[in-house]
Amino acid sequence: MGQQSKTHQDSRTDPYAVTKALSHMAVYLVAIVAILSSVVPVIYVWIGGFRSGVDINSNPGGLPNPWIIDNYSRVLSSERFWGSLSSSVIIGASTTLGVVVLGLMAAFVIARYSFKGRQALYALFTAGLMFPLTVASLPLNILVRNIGLHGTHLGVILPQIAFALPVTVIILVPFLRAIPDELEEAAAIDGTTRIGFFWRILLPLSMPGLVTVGVLAFIGSWNAYLLPLLVMAAGGMPQDSWTLPLGATQFATQYSQDTGSVLAYTAISMVPALVFFLIAEKQIVGGLAGAVKG
Image (cartoon, rainbow, N blue to C red; front, side):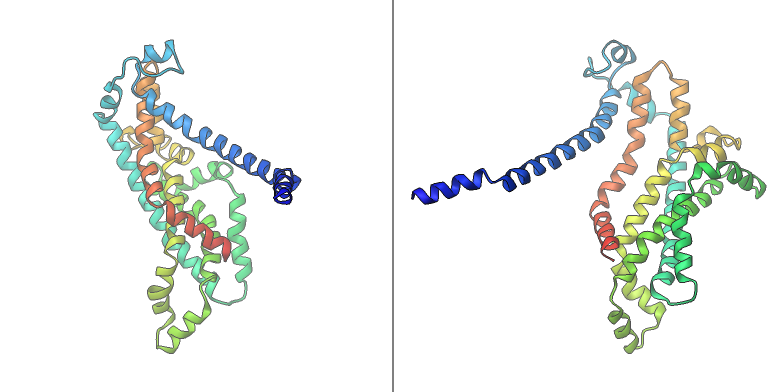
């Protein structure tokens, strides 16, 4: 009995066990800080939408006193908000579709075909990650204007697809490579062509990866500000057709003294992208895990 007690006491004072416990505590602490830094601002924006401007100015960090819904009602009754929402949905959905289709086609060829220059082509897409939009803003704006797409939705959609393709291909190529060659060989024995293998086998198996790149493309398009500013605002497009980030800026300028309404506009603008992300959360994790494993 005394020997068991001594062994139990030694295990409690084991330096390795103490170090492991401290490392776990550090991980949990970092996770809690990261969660709070991400969630608290969103909660503040949502709650701030229920406050009046006077209430916010008198006590910026407090709760609504009283709670009001006029700010949200003002935003939801604005035709300009619904026009911006429609514009963001059109651009986001079109960008996502283009990125998924073109990215899958390019990734399929790089991952499943052997040809001269394949690695160079893959390296070219990788190099695209080091070419930010801010660097290309001026020449891109000139190019869009010269081809007659200035002040149009298409002038935003096409560049967004181009800048989203590198990360899409990088995610999908390892994912498609991880699909066993035996499946393709078995399909070929059964008389299935490569196109048939693509549609019947590869496409369903790669769905988590497609959802991942689709969500990333949609959220990136939804939050884009610089490109719509150059193409839409500078292109003379009506304000009712601006995207939500531009609409939020315009709304903040119009109601600069009404902070509560600006927060309400910002809070409602988050909803579609947030819902889209939460619905596809499991597919995103699976897609990224498949890409890393591949």
